[in-house]
Amino acid sequence: MKFGFWYIVLYLFFLTMAVAALAGGISVLYKTFDLKYNGVYATATITDWRTSSTSLHDRNNGSTVTNDGSSYFPIVTFEINKRKLSVATRSAADNDPVAIGDNVGIVYRKSDPYYVELQQHISGSFIAGGVCLFIGLIFTSIIGIFGYKAWKNRSLKQGTSDQLN
Image (cartoon, rainbow, N blue to C red):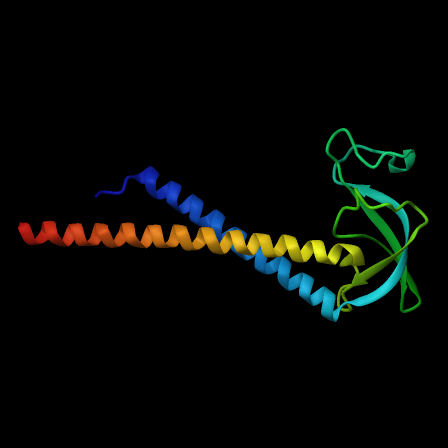
């Protein structure tokens, strides 16, 4: 069996996607474990909102859902070493019942206080990282086994045809 150019391109595309999902899952889980077990727990005040899009929205109008698919990231202010920091959290708080002026629990990295997460979002990060890791493992295994078997069959068929000549 001769492998065509597009067959190889398609195979490499899916293999790259599977490995990216695997690496992404490992990265998210590593960062979440590090934050949960080595992070500094503190209380912060929500002072503003940052959106995932460039358009301006007013989250305080009573609606937490936007029409254009934007997500809201709370900007929290907290004190570290007698210095106030205002940082946007890593996860959106679209469905959280919080508003400007609320005190919330946060976790930040001691080495990088700008890496902040709401305490209530830690479990969601574990779930997202675990799902991504699982999908990456499954698809990398399937695609890797498929590629190995196809390559092995190709080598066997080439060896047989070489022996016939």
